[in-house]
Image 1 (cartoon, helix red, strand yellow):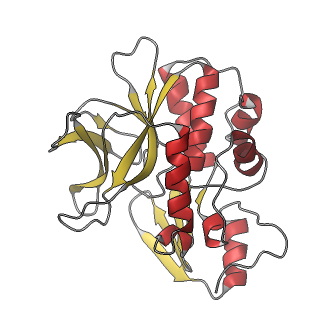
Image 2 (tube, helix red, strand yellow; image 1 turned 180 degrees about the vertical axis):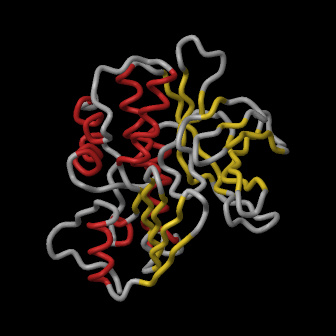
Length: 272
């Protein structure tokens, strides 16, 4: 099924008749990041989100909701394909917060986007729920820095034992003055059924943090908002942070509505 491209572009505030150019890829990517929040409320409320395109459109485009990586990137992949880009879906191991030597499963979805006339594809990812997420796509080239203001990113090659090169996305931490690994990936293509399995695991496994704790993120031009459980954090462009704990589930619903633009069905009660 094809996406309602005009409705999607209106949702992210990027109307028009886009063509498959690098400028369009960059602008759609950033508009999506700033237009649709990251959230895992369906798993916390006890269900695995549908990855069917009509359901994603109903939720993320028309329903005043967000989603997590499989939802965001499935939706973006459909939009980019409709515009005329060629997209290859990938998976990654999240490295943020990993202990030395820890091997995590591939649970993050991202993609490569081929741009006509460009010599290399671009890593494209609007579903990484972190302040270290890409604001714009980055070329698959080692060591080239992307200044996707106010953030900085680069790709580096990592040690690997298999036949495919291992890539790592890094973001620059201004306060610490150093680069931080975000995730690692190879360019092996994945398909929709692969994400159905991963999505089910992440959403329903009782040991999955996404099934137990509320994670919500919103990227704005002048700040990054994050809600983890009841801890609400606002990070300014200069790295300064303001944090507070929300009083109860009712205040969480209010913050979701007022600060993140997320409206849950009337009568929804989040776990205490």
